[in-house]
Image (cartoon, rainbow, N blue to C red; front, side):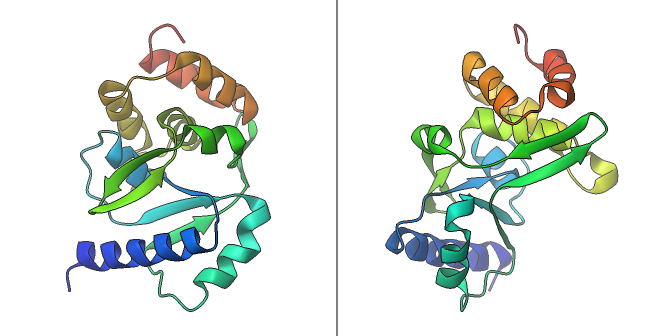
Length: 173
């Protein structure tokens, strides 16, 4: 079985289980960037859940082979500019978009939140990542709500880290 087909089948199973458990979740990071215009191939799928649901999610997915998936909740990223947080909250859930990924209709993080996430990390080819390229593709292909973006930057305590980068990529921020 090809890797994409294996990922698609696993994604479908993860979706079914999380929906049956009534757990809010979103696809984020590179797979979301792909949905928002990045031309990179999807090699893995990152899923974000609320911290309050993390134990439930582990129980629901415990017997499922989710190799190629990373399911995370609230986390902090230590950067040279300080610690930035990243998490799912009600505002993100309200703005979730549904789109097809590998043929499966899934909830995807709002483009603005994914931009902030990628801008916090700022990883490049030397780390085998494409965060800045992904941001450029997302802002080229999607309408970005600048007010929501600014609000989320503050919410994640990421102003010092992401504002200089985003000012170079997004006019009027």
